[in-house]
Image (cartoon, rainbow, N blue to C red; front, side, top):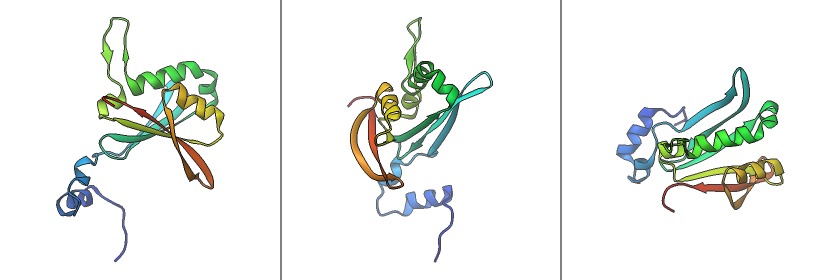
Length: 150
């Protein structure tokens, strides 16, 4: 008996042989999406999403020093990309969360990290609870954002 890296075949097997048949109905095919935010040849930041199931994801991002110099533009771009937006002609463009069917999006911010707190609040997240020992021995504040019908 031992462990090895999980494969798609393992998930396919478990869908057929699990005792909790409902659990695997909500498992996404791809769980991790990572992106770089750039302008011309400059990296402004990196981030991504980890799908927990078909409707819940955890997001993360980090701006570079160049991104911090362009904070407002970066925030606007990230928010429109996550949430979608309506252009000047009145046409709605779906965001990542719409496209992926995300209903609950979580972000974890190290407790006391004021810049991170302002960032997630600016992006429309609301504080929900505290997770102890999330970043090593440091706690994190859990922020959430809901999509679709609440």
